Length: 146
Image 1 (cartoon, helix red, strand yellow):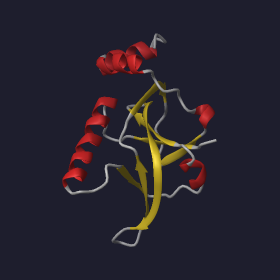
Image 2 (cartoon, helix red, strand yellow):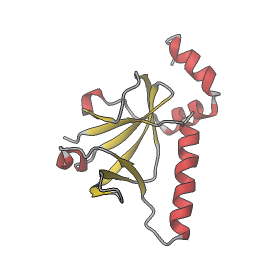
Image 3 (tube, rainbow, N blue to C red):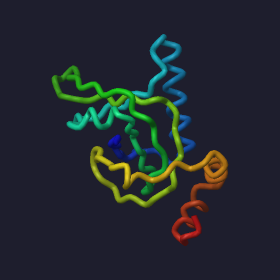
Image 4 (spheres, rainbow, N blue to C red):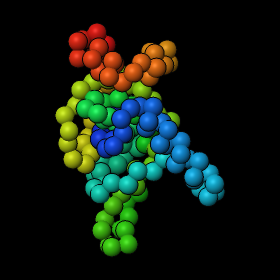
């Protein structure tokens, strides 16, 4: 059974903005002749790599709620120019909207078990939620209507 990671998308205001940001990075990578994979660098390296690579995803927390995920396809520990250990989380650049769920802020990343992971939204549901203004969607969620 795959294990997932969950992380805050700091500075990101919506799933749409996350998709745009990743699309910009993919365009820059394409211009440089690099593979079309989304790479996110983090400080700590997960210890349960095999479980994550067995089909795990990185779930993004955006403005206080778990909102989207990307499938993890690689994990590469490395040392930066200052000799500090870091880790590349390599993902398919496809953002999948998930059923929004509130999440308190935390530092770094956390493991997320499959039973605790929110379900993916269907294409119709995701399109409807993405088209809705973010404040309205959050208010409807807070009222228990989403």
